[in-house]
Image 1: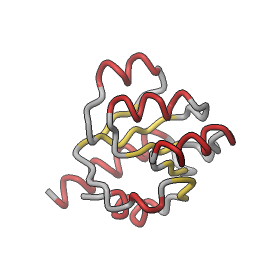
Image 2: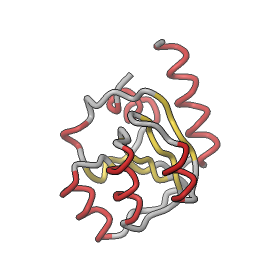
Image 3: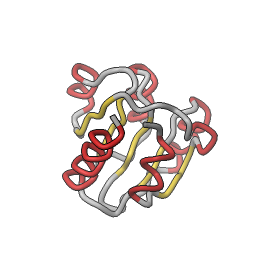
Length: 113
């Protein structure tokens, strides 16, 4: 499954990295504590978070995550978007809760795999 599949299925709004929508998603991680995400996420995961500051880009780059979904209709800060574009990290936004987004992605992965 790739980012484009998730964007379409969940009606996500793309905020950066539109050219990276063919990036495969290998798993997922939901969390807001950056140190937890750094310790427990894996390369290729889609990260679901409520965080909007630019440090999320550093974590996503370091861990080579597939992309970031920001939940609850929150928008990334301007400097986050700029850094995301520079580093090639896809950022998407959903009005849904982290719980709902996680469940829907999990369901999609089960259907496709």
